[in-house]
Image (tube, rainbow, N blue to C red):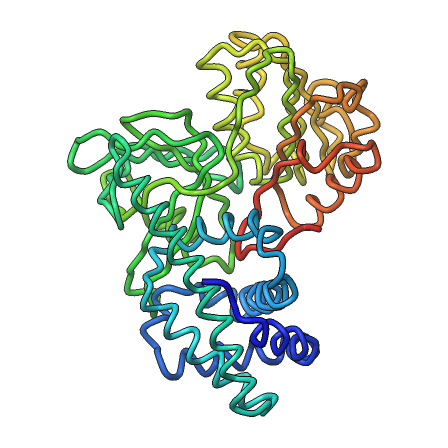
Length: 401
């Protein structure tokens, strides 16, 4: 049911006041909610509270919604990304009521706008919550009803563990029940649900799948972070034979193979952002795609870079049309230009011959925020339209635009 004009006018009129105290409001909201509902600490990533990533994402989402009440269609891509993120955390409808209650109480405490204004914000929030609840149930049902699908989690066993670089470790995961699993779209991610005595709360993390679509196994590649609870747990503690609880593959970022086999595809990544790109590349190799292909990757050093040999072997064995360009930020005397890397420093697409010459080329990229903003800026400077730019955010959704 559409919002009443009064509701729209009230929210539009007060949205600037909310925006003005956005970060403070978001931080206060989470403090209030976790005090009232500490069980949600098993759902939210508490590290994102400390670095303000989640409060910032919430603030951006609330302001974007409040300023687009007359054009909700413009929020469609953001809603889709967030809905998939929520599904990966197994978010339930009742949790929206908890969020709504605490959000309104926080607005009241921070701004004291009066009950009439709070009532209208409550109506607007209910509409937003219902949009997400409806879409997320559709996603849950679609995934569960697909061959090999399930909800919410399923036991998987670590069948193989292999160190791919000084920073990245690959895990092969097979279903503990031995039954088929859902074949993923290349680019999507898995959620791992972890409970361990070393962690005060359940921790949920998403990791991009690196394997090609399969009904038998998934592979993920995880970068170890010194401050990362789950990445350290996976790298240092989990071994072959251990069981993990996994949600099925989710994500709105995946390879959409063009029907026209002459359409070029560019896979661009920074650091561990290569993981979804590897799944895409492996899938293209399995299908023996004939599209012109680019593999463009930037890493800090050869020591931490993963899968470089496999990419070269894929070109030699299956995808001879693949053009490979590697950047390294740190080069040692032992690194040979033209062999170990092509360029030093940050990615500069102007150094790739004819990279933006074809007006149909599809560009996929993932990496740190700064990396993605830099790549998008370079693509836009070459008049690449938004319809040909595809990206994924690691962590809470925060548009790069």
